[in-house]
Image 1 (cartoon, rainbow, N blue to C red):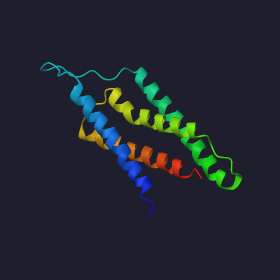
Image 2 (image 1 turned 90 degrees about the vertical axis):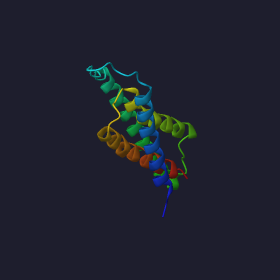
Image 3 (image 1 turned 30 degrees about the vertical axis):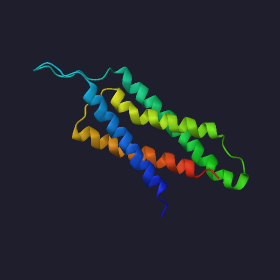
Image 4 (image 1 turned 135 degrees about the vertical axis):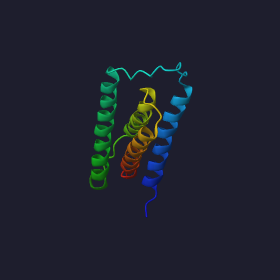
Length: 128
């Protein structure tokens, strides 16, 4: 059994949930009776752009990595570094956008982190 994708998923879950918990802990306490304001609406477009970039880059690396086994044309290592950076940005984004640290949000971020880490590690493993 190939454990690398599972290790990648576990690492991504840890990064995503730990950053969410750390951001929550570093936020200043609100006065009694005051509710936290929601994230700015412009932040949703940033998250969508980050995710689109990550999906496109990872899809490209999966396709070219798979094809490289027969064509011997390997994607440059810099694209893999860019994909790791994009994946990291996608994992850190919920914490930076001000998502509250609740059980529901932590669960959602963990499942999302598992998906990001799993696909990223598989894209890297397809490189010959």
